[in-house]
Length: 92
Image 1 (cartoon, rainbow, N blue to C red):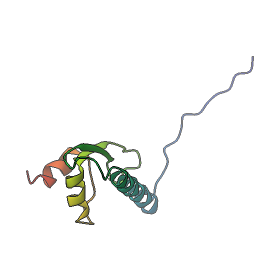
Image 2 (image 1 turned 90 degrees about the vertical axis):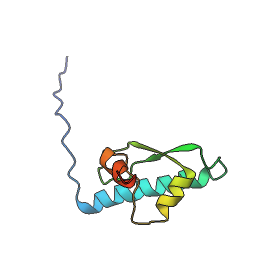
Image 3 (image 1 turned 180 degrees about the vertical axis):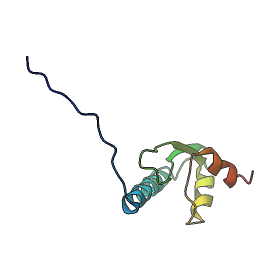
């Protein structure tokens, strides 16, 4: 019987360009989602990706299409699922 020893996976080292690319792809996916669901009731919740730079974060941000459009009206604002970001966006 042949035995093989598997090495544990090593962490991928990301530089700023790759992290920005991941964030950009999440923003693009969210825009595709919004465009595809344009005919939904504007008060219905839609699942979007968290747009943070964390390459392993795919948390869900639930927003209505109105809230999404309001966030996109401020281009520098990313959708983030992390509690501190939600509290800051709510003004708490």
